[in-house]
Length: 184
Image (cartoon, rainbow, N blue to C red; front, side, top):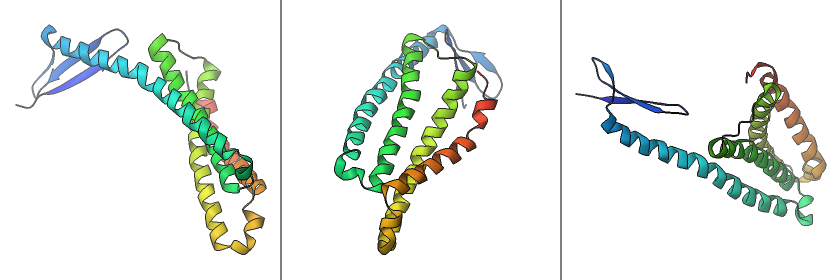
C-alpha cells in the first residue's frame, strides 16, 4: 500500500494531506505535530541561511574586490574581469539573500510595480553578467596564451572594459522584457 503526502504551506497554516490510490484525506491532529516541527525548521532555515549568505558573501567578495583592485593587479585585463564579476556577485547577494532575510525575519516586503520589475531585471542581469565575465576572462587568457605576440593589443584593461560594457548592454537588452512583463 503506497502512500504519499502533499504539503501546502501558507503564511498562516500548513496543511498535510495523505494520498493513496483511492482517496485524498486530511491528516489527523496527531500528525500535525510533525508538521509543526517541519514548519519551525523551515522558518529557522529561512531566517538564518539568507543572513549567513549575506555575511559570508559580503566578506568574501569584499576581500576579493580588495585583492583584484590592488595596483599590481589593476593593469591585468583578467583581474579587471574578476573585479567586475565580484561586483555582480555583490549585487546578486544583496538583491536576493538580504531581501529573503527581510521577508522571512521581519515580514518586510519590498513591493511595487516598478520595484518588482527592477528587482527581477537586476537579479537576472547580475547573475548572467557574472557568468559571462568569467567566460570573457577565460577567453582573455586563451588569447594571451595563443597569440602572445598580439596580447598587448587585445589583453589589456581598456579592452576588458569595452568587452564588459558590450556584455552588459547585450544582457540588459536580452533581459529588458522583465521591465515590461513582470507583474507585482
